[in-house]
Length: 420
Image (cartoon, rainbow, N blue to C red; front, top):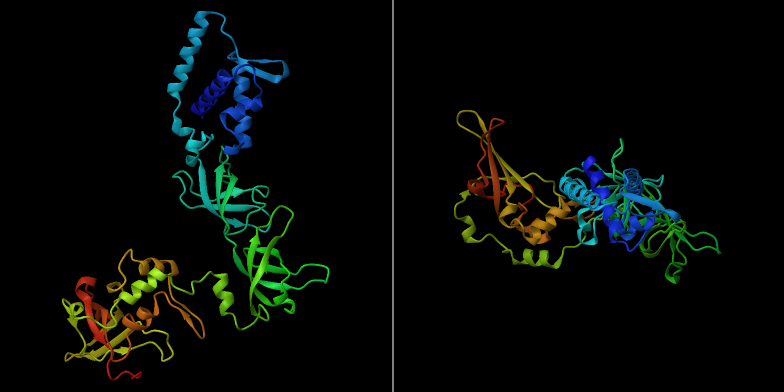
């Protein structure tokens, strides 16, 4: 902290020395940290405190109109002493201690700005979860209601930290909104009176807002309480609701059993695949190539049976069990060798990572991989040769579970499958 105070004093003296005459505290602050760069109230109070200290030790003097200037030296010896002390202070200051506390020139601003994702509380305040936090920041940053007034859960923002960490953690100041998290949302349609615009009500755990809707002739007969998909055209401002337009009508009510679109929109699920992912999928062969068989153990003579139900969207697993002459049982468990077709870093690999898993609905599925793979080469369909990863298990304990390199086996579901 002592080094930080020395840095503040040097910044004050430098600001005063660059001025063409006495200047106010406001000008001192503006010189050290321009308002557009962002500065905390604590920082301003600290500068004022250090300025008073410099007056006390007779480095700075205060004149009429609360204007400040560097105190003129009484003699050449006094001037030499002052220059020596200034240089000594400069060498003692560790610049790294200042980085996260004081706003530096615009060229170095990126060191102080932290980018994160907002979670808004219904009481007005918010927390920002840093995306790539600096090493010292181990927690979310608090934004008071004034700073979080125009923010919504899901927004990506740039913030700066207040100079000091309180017992409850760091607090910050909003610098700019990088990206709005609320672009489309499911809401309840409220028709309202003939003299008021209809609104869309969003009332979830993370978001409680009203969106004023544009009057559109196509939806003039929409029933009260209908579930609608709304596009937000104008974000909320202080004292004003957000504005938006109806994209589509999802159901007669938010309680409708037809909830597939509601779930898809609410959880931002991906319904379609990017063009580059589909291109990669189409480039995969329609059947197993001869070169794929080389170096694999051939298990096609075993009667593998798929274990997914008859109404399953895909068949990921197959098993085979046999009784051995010594009375023990041997179990083979086969799983589709997806990694043979989806290579690390490919467009399909990145898209699968973003999706995380396939999502199943009563009457449809949003697959993790394009259908050419999920229902084709990477699905253990009955009576079709497939590449698989296989584990061999003896009497409920694994006797052999080979690595990917050597376990790549060739397996097919057998004619005994109930799905033939």
